[in-house]
Image (cartoon, rainbow, N blue to C red):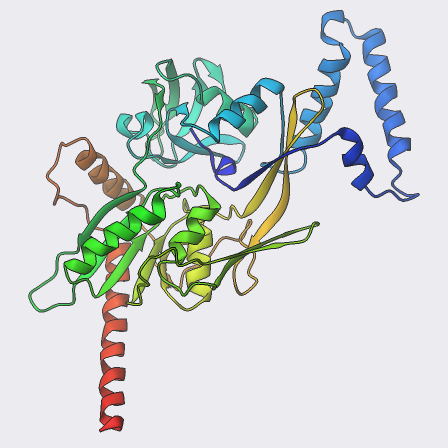
Length: 423
């Protein structure tokens, strides 16, 4: 299970506490020594007078202080116990076990942003907006997001019961699920969209998340659509929670020239630029529309923001999630670690993504019933309960297709005018 705060590029570092202190700045108004005395005095009082002596070890108190300190900064910074840090390092090398739901805190309530396709949560019928009231009978009220993610993840094969309050109806229902190794096909549904005889051939492809092979998989899908005569493309990033930053940059490289600046990260340390690379892929220059919605996050926002700023694509849908920050993971001497927000993403035109999102060129929203119908049609196809051609009405896709038809007409007229002048 990956939550939105996990789906960003993480820089894994190792450092000593002294090195961190050496980089800190202090002033007379904000002296570390004065405030450390306050912390030390509070720790002394707790160890001396707290009724339960078994809970006042120096390690427990220090870790508790760090946990609260990081949690107060922002929803994405956190303190990691040694076992959590070790598990995170393993996750960066291999697959992970979970239920496949992207979650966030909405008004303090643990809420599903979107279920990941091909996952237990998706197949069970969990939907965007569903609230998770209990995990294995334990209430999620006032539960920090990081703690909820830890409870949702675990060993494949383990049973987990989620008590869900359904969006819209308010019905409360238990969902018994089994954790699985989450393997999600990142590129899906590549096809030429149905159209009347003589109409332009518009291709469609969906990216569910950004993994290591996503760009190469997308290039193969585009080759297939090219062979079928695609004249324009709809790239669907709705419900895509992000993934690897490098993968998102590589995807942009299929549509813009090598060397084009895609995104920059800036914080208190010197920033870094990420530019498109050719990697032997064919550059696609046909008209492009990108579909996004409120659940498009992180890498999806990098792609949409770059292609919008560069004038390479028309963005259709809703303002995106607004998860555009970088978390650096720094090891501590006792094997624990801190995950700290250290930078923010900026689009080529210097637009900040974090907490702002990427706004569409063409705004198109879905009614809750329309949204659920689209997701249920996808689920039905994936579970082989419907024919491959079955689909729900999709007003956002229709708007994207209309926009591409307009661009194709504009291109045709421009080419005709150019030939006339040349003649």
